[in-house]
Length: 201
Image (tube, rainbow, N blue to C red; front, side, top):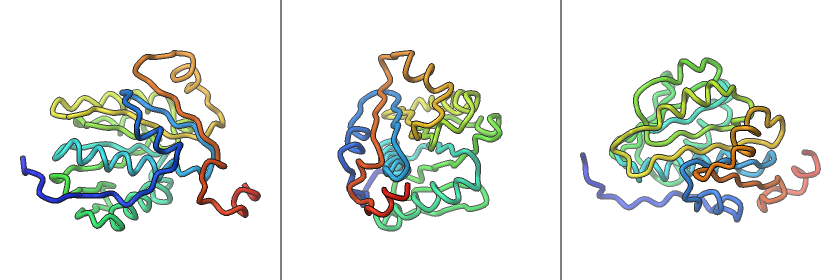
């Protein structure tokens, strides 16, 4: 495995609710927050941080479908990589990012519409963007991949709006698991949002 030779700083200034999410030591985390609270940016920053920690391995980001990924995760991840001057390549047809500065760590972007498509090789981290709109089956299929034995830290984390918690309520709220942390925030917790956004939304 190639040794790290370049110091990387992800260009991202987390706010208080995002800091709580990043600082969690739990195996699994869920951020429940309103629209405009910076969930996708936070999730992308976390998957990048873990890519450097799990140098030369792979991770998975799960979106509802590929059209949603094109509007949310893909541009957010690309913006973070570009602004941080991280060396990477993107395969648009395969929905992957290869982070060259992280030992060619591969970030796979998956679609929850077909749960069986989430099966694959072992990964070191799994991130679900807007988990509440996905099926429980897609959740189970994806987390089964988080078993890369060479990982320094294996982590599963999710972001979602508080609407329609459905199966998430039983899985994350009622279960009271010791290895899980649920963090809550609102749209108003994003200090960078203009007043016009908050009034309209």
